[in-house]
Image (tube, rainbow, N blue to C red; front, side):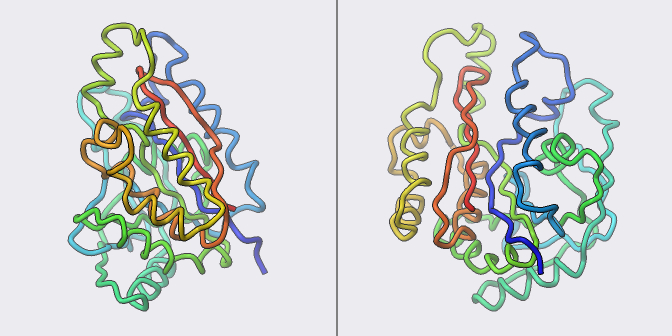
Length: 271
C-alpha cells in the first residue's frame, strides 16, 4: 500500500531562472523556497512523478518512454553555465505504458516518444524540488489543440495513478504574457502587478467546493476577467486542467502567490 499522492500545479519560472544571478537578487527567491519546501509537504515519498509541462505539445497525448532521458535545453540567450545543468532522474517505461492504458481506456488516441528528454518545464523546477534526481519521472505532452475539456478529461483518466503512489505535476505559469512581464522588468516593475483579476478568478475556480462547478469554470477559463492578457496562448495554463481533472472530489487550495517581473504567479494543490 502507498499513501495517496496529491495532484499539483507548480510555476516553473522563466528559463533557467533558479540557477542565475538576477537584479534584484531575490527576483525568484520566493518560488525557489516554495519548491525547496515542497517535498516535505507530501504524505510520503512518491513512487514516481508524472509531469505535464507547458513546453511539449503533440497531435495526440504522447508519453515519454525513454528510460534515461537527457535534458532539453529549450531556452535561448542565457549564460553558458545554464546549458551545463544536470538532473539525471531515470525514466519509467512501465509507468509510461500505464499512462497510455489509462488514456486509451478513456477513449483518447495516444503516442509514445522513446527518445525525448526532459524539457526545462520539468528539470528546472524539479532540480530545485528533488535535487537528488532519484525518483523515476515520466513526461506527458499536452494535446496540441489545447482543448480545456479534453485536458480535464485526460486528468480524470489519470486519477488512479494517485492511489498508486504517483505524484501528478502540472508545470506551467498562471500568468504567461512575456511581453508585459519584460516591459515591467525593464521599467523596474513599478505599479500594480499584472494578472490580478485573472488570478483572483482562477483561485475562486480552483477552490470551488463542487468539482463539477470547478471543472465548468476551468473549461471556460478564456471568458474570465483578464484571461487573454494573462495567457495570450494557453499552453502554460492547460497543465492545470490535467491536474484539476485528476483531483476528483478533492478541493483545491492555493499554495503560493508570488509577484515576480511585474506579474502574479500562483501554485495550486488538490489533496
